[in-house]
Structures are given as structure tokens and as C-alpha cells.
Length: 586
Image 1 (cartoon, helix red, strand yellow):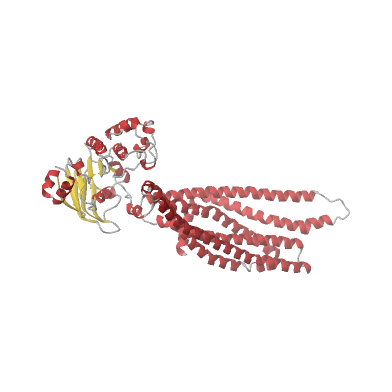
Image 2 (cartoon, helix red, strand yellow):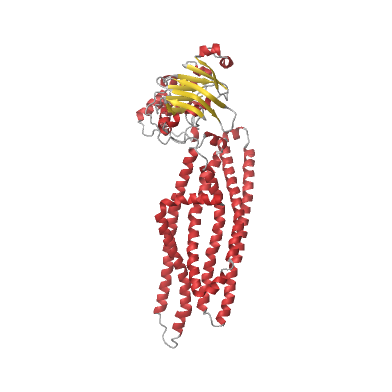
């Protein structure tokens, strides 16, 4: 419970920027509460005062003026309630919508800053469920639930004050069922909290299952596994259906029991009030007003009980959101970052040690120096550490010890902007966004000139292909670039890297999945692009790196040899085996 209280306090911190609007909202709700007791008070006046005063004038013409005034007052009360309720709902919706926008933005930004290992062990559907579904439930908590809570509190205070003034003894008697209502709410609330958390986890599982199946739909169809995937989804939905039923049943039972307990008060008051009227110690109008206000009293009490149930359910989503927000970011920018406008391109790994959270592979005191403008290739068997070097240089992870220097500046001290401006990665899996070819190329540099875009696409050997399309650079590429071939996507990605004009270009197996024609086009592009840049090439296909200035051979996280292809062909058995397997002549 203490942890939940802490999270609620953190959640309420989102309200702080809107404190003035909140004060206005509270004033409006207080006014609504006052108007709420005006109708029963008017009813008491009508029965005990207005009607007897009119009836006392027996034989005289009935004066219509007091009746009209009374009617107009009632109309005014209802119009006031309507306008104030509209203003309250608008203010609450405005505050709630902005809070949720801020929370969703904070969650998204934080998730973006988490380590690659987080995304490797988490399903995309699960992440999306927390950003969308769970935050939506929190929106309900901070708008509807919070609004009803304060409205009920104000109503409760106003009604109790009025009832105590009307008949304090009857008021105290009528409050006897309240503690039982609170106890029942607390008991059932815990159970609903557990069910709500299981529901959200199942929804996240379903989202992940659907996302995975739809992304892999080509494979599903190719292997004729549509029925199998439907069965998997049905299994998840069956569990989800059971939880929905259980949630509805527990909520309904809780509500009905609370309603039953709450009705004991009015029953006692009506019975006792009848006795008091018969004895002449109470007027009919007072009893009617008391009864109506008593039902008003139990309405906010029942509302508060339901709110507790809703809060318990919503806390499952709050916990899931803060579970992500409390994961520390893997990499933080230095408080006083160093800016480098254009790096020379010198790189040095100094006694770098690193291992992943899952264990297994590790670097121990890795040392590697790359001079500015040098083209190096890194080869080795799978799991030797090739991609880890790239991950560390791109600062997707920080080393456990040692330093990685760019132009004699530690990467940890370099600003993120300088890092991304000077080091660009072309990954082995070319990814394009669902947009136009032009927008994909200028991703990250939207203010670039059109002639620079054309120059970059020509250098990437993709300009002529783009010009052959009906809509040219405005052609849509579809989600993940599905309308383009692997070679076309890779050359668009290369153009996207070229246009940034980085000092250091990293090619992580950029041609591993391409046919010979596409590979040759990429190689022709690279021969022009890499002239004045430091380049690091990761490759399984050794034919693509024969002209590198230096080849680094990695095995089990250690550099076992380095030199030109001819040199290490003589000195490194592992490299020689790799070459012979691919039948490459140096």
C-alpha cells in the first residue's frame, strides 16, 4: 500500500502545472454541491411553508406570484447545475487530456532511452500496450474518477452539514451503515486490483501475440500456419474472457452488497420519521427533505466506494507504467557535454571491458586504435564481438571499465548530438518508415536542400531507380519499406547515412543479404562515399572487404590478429579458414 501511495503522489505531480485550473474546478464543484442541496431545501420550504401559507387563505383568491417565483427559482437552480456541470466536465477533460499527453510522452521518451537489451527481451506489443492501453486507464483515473471523487466529497460535506442542522440525532443514526460500506469496499477492492493486473497483462500478451503474427504474416502464410496462429490467439482470448467475466461478477456483487447496506439508513429514517411526525415532533416537509438528502448522502458514499474499486483496478495500470519508468536509462548524457562540430575520425578503445546482462560473451581490456580516414574491417565467427564493438561505439551501451575515445574525447563526455552527427550506422537490416522515399532519406536532417538529397542518392546508386518510379521521390515505401527490394532499401538507407556527411561511417554487414548485382552497386557507392571518412565494416562475406586498409580478426572477444588481407592470410589460421570456406583468393 505504501508503494501505491508513492506512485499516486508521483502521478498527482502531473497536476502541478494546471493548479490554477484545478482551483477553478474545485470552486465549480463546491458550487454544484451547494446547488445539490438547494432542491430538497426548496421542497421542504414548499411543503412546510409555501403550501400552508396559501392554504391558510381559505376563501380568498390564490395568489399565483409566490408559486411563479418558487418555480423560477427551481428552474434557475437546474440551469445553474447544468452550466456548472458542463464547465466542470470541460475543465476536467482539458486537464486530463494534457496530463495524459505529458505522461505518454514521458513514457515514450524514457522507453527510447532504455538499453537495447530491454528491447531484445521485451515484446513490441507489450511495450505498446503499456504506452497506449495502460496510460488510457490512467487517463480515466485522473479525469472521470478524480472528478467524481471530489464532487462526491463536496456533496458529502454539504449534505452532512445541512442534515446536522436539520436533525443531528437522525443524522448520526443514518450514518451507522457507513463503516460497513468502507470495510466491504476495502475487502473487495484488493481482489479487483489483482484481477485488473491480470487483465492488463493478458491484454498486453494479446497485443504482443497479434503484433508478432502480423509482422511475420509472410512466414505464417508460407508455412500454412494460419490455423495454428489463430489457435494461439484464441487461447489468449479465452483466458482474457474468463478474467473479464470474473471482473464483472466481483464488481457487480460488490456494488449490490454496498447498495443493500446503504439502503438500511433510509429505511430506518422513514420508519422513525413516521413515528416522529405522528408524535408531532417533526413536520412532513422536514422528513421529505431529510429523506431526499439522505439518498443524496448515500449516493456520494456509494460513489466513493465505487471509486475505491476503480482506483484499485487502475492501480494495476499505474504499477505497469511506473515499472517501465523506474527502469534506469542505460546511457545518460554528461551534465556538461563536449561539442564537436566535425570530428577528424580518430577512434581508440583503451582497456575496454564489457559484458551483457545475460552473461556469456565479454570483452576484457580490449585495445584498438583506428586512425582518422582509415578503412578497417572486423571479421570473426558469430558471437566473437563484432557487433558489440559497434554497439559500444554508437554508445548503445557503456563499457564497464576503460574508455572509448573519439578525437581524444571520451564518448561519455561527448554530447549526444555530436555523437550522432559524427558517427552514422548503416545496419544489416535496412529499416524504412511508412512514408515517402524523400522523407526516409532526410530522416534526422529535415532542413537539407533538395540538391543535396539528389547528390546523396546518386552516390548511393539509387537516384536512377527513384526517378523511374511514377511519383519519384514522393513514392510511398510502405511499412518497413515492404514495397522495395532488399538492395533498394539498403541503398536508400545508405543515402540516408551519406546525407548526414559523418566523419565515421559504420557498415554492419550492409551487403550480407543482397544478390551479387545489388552488392556490386553498394560496393561502387562505398568506393566513392568512403574516400574522406573513417570506416568500420563488419562482414561475413569477405569478398567485400579485401581492399580495407586493415582487417581485425576477433575471436571470443579478443583481437587475435590484424593487418591487410594478404598479411593475415599468412599469419592467422582462423582468417585463412574463413577465406578458404568462401573460396576467396586474396
